Image (cartoon, rainbow, N blue to C red; front, side, top):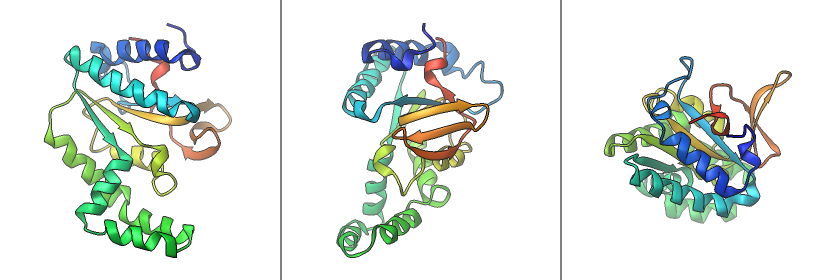
Length: 203
């Protein structure tokens, strides 16, 4: 398999992802050098619709092979949390009346990863058996949730399963700057060293 799978057509990327994720080596979290089993699937933001379709097909195909996926869409989870706390309508009313900075600060408080977001994910982890977790909806929750914060805080809760984050941007490696998540290919989302690029993983 080409090392540069990320630039290949969607069909080839799908085949690579299916082969890797369904492999016993991936599911048993082998070859990680004691690192957390976190993987990034970067894609161009312009491919968002195609990648949503790929995710659905991937979940269905994996299920047919007996591999169960738990998908956590962060945007859907945020709405769920607002409704659970009975502040959904209040947030909708406030949004047009405050500045973007104030609204961002409000949401960051509600969706604090350590106090609120990760505990909510932890609950979903216990509700059904699964083999691999998909994290989606990353672009939709920016800027009030940053992906590196989610990954950092998720390490304790999800270290027992392989986790794949679908990331609309680039996951770059540089000797000078380290490893970074660049959302939409433009917004530097801080350094995160502990995940693997799924396209560099062999089945």
